[in-house]
Length: 151
Image 1 (tube, rainbow, N blue to C red):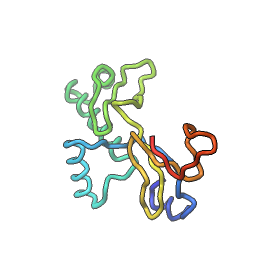
Image 2: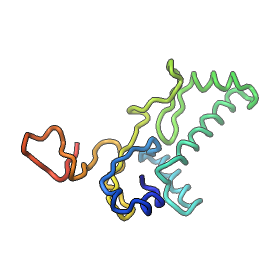
Image 3: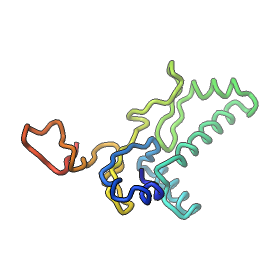
Image 4: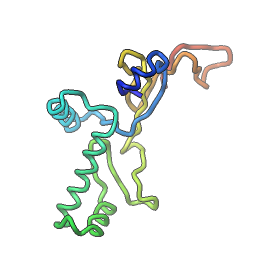
C-alpha cells in the first residue's frame, strides 16, 4: 500500500485505503538502534515490508544453530526453535502450538495504516487509526456523522 510504485500507479485513488503489515517494529531502545543502523546502511527508513521479518528469521535460526552447535543437525535445530520462543524485532516468535506457526497478538502485533497521499500515512501502529470519510463508525448513533474517528 505504501510502496512508491503503488502510489504512482493509483495516485489519489489510494487515499483513504486501509491496510495492514505484520512487519511493525515497535519502538524500544534496541529496535530504534536497529532502525538507525538500517538507515545508515541502506540510506532509507525501514520499509513497511520484509526486512524486519527476514532479519528476525535469520537471527532466530542463528540462535538455534548456536545452541545446537551444528548447522547440519536440522531436526535438532527445528526442535530447539519449537521449544524456545524467540524475542525479535517484531515481537516474540513462539512455534509451540499445534499449527506450528507464529500467531499475532500482544507479543507480535499486526499494525494498520491508512494512506493520506503524498507518501504519508494517516496512522501506522497498533492502537488507533483514522477512518476514511466514507466509513462511519458503527458505535455512532443513528444520524450522527463524523469525518474521522479513533478507537
